[in-house]
Length: 427
Image (tube, rainbow, N blue to C red; front, top):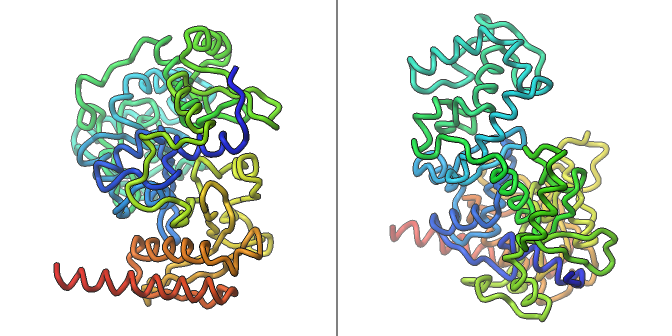
């Protein structure tokens, strides 16, 4: 068993996710590489400053622009979106996921029950899809449909389309303002991928994929996602076989009670990081996270769902679903990564009437950072890049209380915006 420190664990998990020691991908090709390295890009419709998945990719990919992932998914068909836990997944994995889709169809207690409850609507939607090619939920007026009480949809047509999507008969053809437009699977996926892989092979794939997604995984139903689609009775036996074959390895993190698991193919990366070396394949293209802070999306896998506390000792809860009077920080607060630590957070909004990025509050874990020159410079660089990513034309940072930080952020952002304007003139 490999024993590592919490610092090694933190850097390894950040590195696996493309967040440390800096951005190592660029543009469209880099976005594809990042999405594959992440294993899952969780999608979320909420757009306050930008959607969570776009912020996730901005923190990993140089020159990323909002929506670039959609071109890869819906134009190039390199990825597809699917699942109750909605995520973009590589298209070449489809045969494995079709095993899970079939299991969902056969599970009468969950998705499968929709087949019984909305059988007529499902038959109707199949026929309409064959006739029209693409269909959206908005195509069917509420007045013409049977109302439902499901959180998946308020019309029988919506649930029928959702059911067909979950069992793999249809896929997302594209999105308009994040709303799915459905099409029959054969109109979306390459023909050679529309089949099921061997069931045992699919289960091994699913477990390894989620170990890779976590970086270090407990292989626990409560803490990790490896069970997604894997029958509970099979999981322990499969994990033991993967261990015996060296496809996963046991790792003990100092200070953590539970044994964790990593991919066997990541053993060399772990040894490099443990020895204080940055793996060559992780070398950044430009600035490091020490030179320039990175803002983590609300659903970033390294910090969401309590992981920020485990890895960084940083208490982070996405407060967007809390009533206003229960929020400690703000509606859309993002953690700030500096080096390999989460050192601060900020809340913000994008005032679209004036195209102004407004910082509503900045909270430091250590007040001394407010007068730290190196942090001030790194923070300023991070905000300058972020404001241009959002396409804002102005910054309002009056809510930042530390004079040094506020001054540096204004100066760096104004310079970045002036550069953007000059570039636009030349173009």
